[in-house]
Image 1 (cartoon, rainbow, N blue to C red):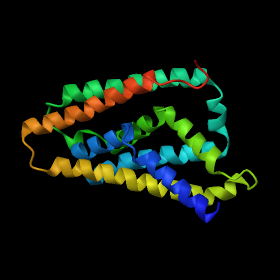
Image 2: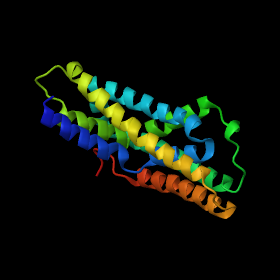
Image 3: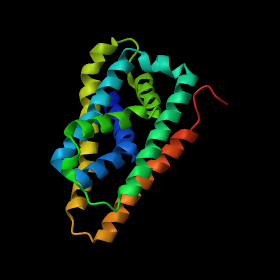
Image 4: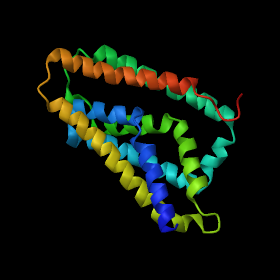
Length: 206
């Protein structure tokens, strides 16, 4: 990958991972609820998913999945239902006292990994990144030495920032009413993202 190509790829990835979405909302919510240090498990879950998808993209698996619109369609519905469920549960629990120690690190990690994985639109994003930036005349795995560190570093920086924002909100001396409404806004975002995901067009469908 040329120097110019790397800059373009890095800029693409910045936009790809910093645009607010379910991962960002989950990071902010984790930071508010569990604090920054404990919420790092959630960032690790996202990085695990990113590493997995990068490897699958390099192996051509995402291109294969993109050729099956039915798989996208049903995966999209499952992902949408899960996000809506998280939103409704978050809204109902917004008035309950926060109990940071009630949730294990494994649960924080697993939830973050699942939220990152179920968004089938991310498969299209990784596929687009590889079709646009990987040089076809150069072995793909040799290019991964540049692509993976760049993508993972930007991804980590983005979601660490979202987590820090959430932790800052959680530490601030907000009134009980304001705290409830901030948590409800985060919950509503999950519902909105679920509806948008469920209504998004599927590759190969009219």
